[in-house]
Each structure stands twice: as structure tokens, then as C-alpha cells.
Image 1 (cartoon, one colour):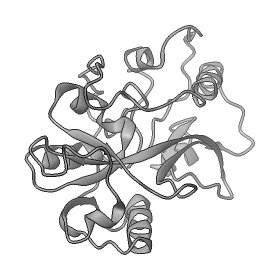
Image 2: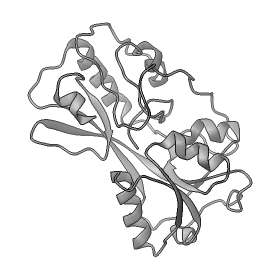
Image 3: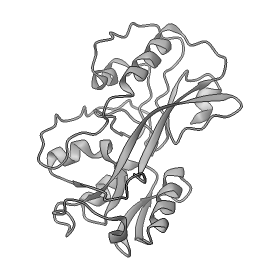
Image 4: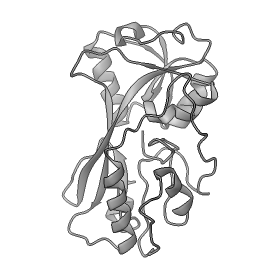
Length: 239
């Protein structure tokens, strides 16, 4: 989906593991810590924390092998001497969560992406016990075409994202209460890819006081939401 920004179909994109290219400029936005996600009845569900070494030979629902996030997780697991048994592979977080809910295996997912399910009690999210300085996180970044001026609405949206970037992304875990996420998504957008393109030519004001979750319905006609992933309250990015 990087082509959407390069071709001008979108002015901005929100991507995981951002990387600048000759035509695109990537701006770091925030980092999301990974947690171990399992079904409530799983033997690990009552643990306060889990070491990566504990995942050795454990059935795991993973990402497709061609995704950057899979490469990064495999690298970190190997460094900790863990080799889980990958039983299922998917290209998006939503499908992985559904598989974990039926106890097909555990998964390593960014913490903000499981806020709804943890609040509803359908999943457990367990912090990872990793050595200091080696926290496992998913970096997110904003991409745009180099040297191309942004339309007013896209510019305001970029300013808003920058303001939100420093806020904690994690929703509550376990017994803390969280509001349910919005249910609707834009028709015609399949899950999986990696960004929220803000379509060019739109010029509606963005109230600066709006919480981030409120942007989703406001930008329905402007934004193609892909693969429901939370930044605190449900905006999509690629795995």
C-alpha cells in the first residue's frame, strides 16, 4: 500500500516499521510494546508475566513469513533460544486474534491491538519479561511523498497525529475497564495492509480537541481503514 502514497491516491500513510525511500519520507510516530495473547482458559492466562523462553515449542499463531513483523519476531525469539511451533499464519492481526480466541495457540501482538478483547474477557494479554533495554516493540511511522506540499486537511491531520504520538498507546489489561471500540469500518477495504491513507482533495476542519478515537467516524469518507488495530482506540495500521 505504499504505492497509494507514492501515486498520490493518499497524502499520508501510517505504517509499521517505517523506512524512508527515495520518494517517501518516513517520520517516527510511536512504539507499541508486544504482549503474549492467549485464550482465558490457556495455562499461561493466570501468569503475571511471561519470558520469551517460555514460548519454546508452544503452539503459536503467527504472521505470514513475508511480513517484516514476522521477521522481527523470529529474530528476537531466536535470540532468546525460543522456537515456538507455528500452527497458523495470517497477514493481519484481526484474524490472529480470532484464532487465539478459540485457543488455536498463543500469539505475540502489539498491546494496543487487543484492548477490546481484553476488556470483553475474550482474550488475556500478559506482559513480556524481557531484559532491560531489549523491550520488544512495534515502531509506527507516518509516510508522505518527499517535497510534496500537503492539502490543508492532511496537514492538520498530520499535526494532530504528531500531538497524539507521545501519548501512551496501551489500553488497560486484565481487570481494568475500557470502553468498547467502534464496530464499523469503511466498506470495500480488506484487512491486512499497512496504512491509513488520507485521500487528497478533502478540506474539512479537524477540531483540535477531538480525542483520537473520534477521528475514525469523522474521516470515514477520507480514510481507508485497514486491518483494525488500536492506537488506544482503534485506528488501523499494518501488522
